[in-house]
Image (tube, rainbow, N blue to C red; front, side, top):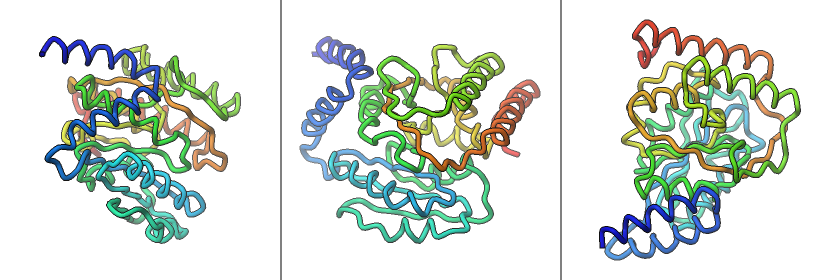
Length: 287
């Protein structure tokens, strides 16, 4: 029986990365198997950081809540309003969601940055599993199923989406200039922080993980801006946690809040801060 379970896990592990549909089907089967004697099938928190997103956030909440409902997950959608001057929080709070799905709004001032917003959302979460996703529904929530399966089978501690590995599908690409800048930043991270080169995409805003294992990592986080993804992966790997990439479908959403030149320079600066903190033995000490 043990050998059979091990064989099944290895077979599933190989198949999940390349076949989201198979992942979805197996996820359904496993949840029915686990449903006997349980009131809930999975406890999942979805964190959505948002800044000046009053025109997008309603759809974000609807998509996240629909994902939880369709898959019979008990869970919550946490919208973190990062000091918006518009009515992002108000719009998010008025969205009608299915019974059994809770919507929570976290708001603060002033604007602190995406990394700070994600950390606040993770700290407020109550799910056994947590995922965070960018506003704008760039990646379909169903793509998270394969990552959750890998977590459930014990194959990793954090599953992060990749727009660049085999099996991904870019439905609407970024501009050539943005792609070049992204590639430069990626190789700078690989070279400077010694993150394994097989990781193809550190910046995809679509990650799932065990809350209890990653919460200490988020509490060590220093970077509040867009480079926080790099720091989280770096600290997680340094802490001995297992990381796995999953291919995702991705579509560029216009009117992004990222200012390419200004924020790129800040991200390079923040990576250097991470490296400098490591050299000084201060990595993971928030400033």
